[in-house]
Length: 217
Ligand SMILES: [Zn+2]
Image (tube, rainbow, N blue to C red; front, side, top):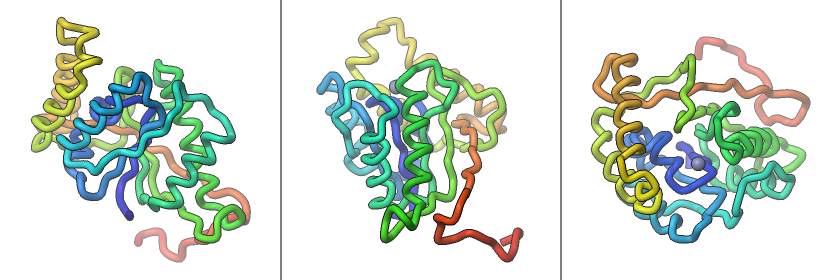
């Protein structure tokens, strides 16, 4: 795949958190959603991905996200099969417990995916980016200009009828517009999405690539 794998807790997290960035890299992006509860949200997720230009998402059948050995294994298998250079997921200090659990699961799955002792063809993810949904990042490191894809992000948000109906005064639309505008002002562009980048540790003798001979390349 060589692209971006976005692992989210719920349908809509991918759009609210990084829909503009996914639309920018639509051909190189895939989405894995860990829950589909209730079921109709899965159809909304498919519709949103279609609007963003991203291929059909992979959806697990969990009701909620818990850090378990089984779920880590399932996510690890996807990482090894898809071989993404970048993974985007939730913040470890997000307000939502499913989001925090997803971060823990993904972080551990990235580690296991790289182990030569676990997989005949292990995969070393290069970068882990953490997105903001309702909890904002105090000191982001990555700013993506999404001015060109903001309209598609708005259209994808509109695909989530069930979620928007919970707040008929337009909370989600307003919050996402204001967030993109705020981040755009900080990033010196019209609209932006912000990410925190987490460096990935390489501990122990498990990795195919262990050393670099040149720090500048
Ligand atoms: Zn969520």
